[in-house]
Image (cartoon, rainbow, N blue to C red; front, side, top):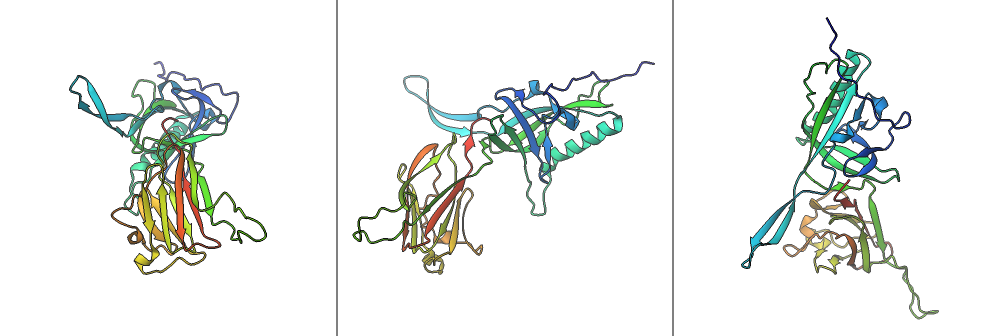
Length: 326
């Protein structure tokens, strides 16, 4: 009786061991890793790992899908009213193999668990996504949060499932944008206090509170986190390009002015305001007019106004740039 064996799939030639760039559809040469909810990192383009990516079947790495809302135009056609980014689906085929059936099954099970673990609820009742990360030869990286959807069941054909098999995994991304894992940080502080006339006119550092510019290098709006360090009695942040602003008054929550060294953190997505001890200060915002605005792509003219500021007063904001493609 002849033995039934799976067809041999030759690993990609990457010039030796290790995870080296391979050609991926829609984005070119890159390496890929997957980080599961436990923090374990799985190389996806390293043939020595016991599995590798079937690059010809990869899809979903390009521009974000959009749903368009249109209005009929009296003279014919339609006019675009709104564009809504849609969740992204990424298809990632993996070929898994082993020297023996036992080794193959062990690798297959471990990978399946790593991906499906994104659907398990944690102690807090929430599901933790995994992270698919694409790295370029120049060292730049972009990643996206993923949840397993389907596809880890093998080909189901004769010869497969003995020492090798392939799975075309579909990963669901609730946020369709890729982000840079390297955080952008911006610091602005009160300029050095000095007598303007003695001994001669004094100009403080350009990195000061007041009118300034913040650059978003990404493709789409980002929602930053702000940390304000006192002293300050009233805090107002204004986007001069859109006119949107919000004001935070520590007296509204019974704290009184921020003293030197005291900090409050304002997050814009999801919206929250926390004092340094973790207490909720969302009531200190000037509702209902407060708008926790984001940063548009490119340069953003903004004003950071801290009433009652003094030595040590500062604003720090941080965000991860977001991109349309990997």
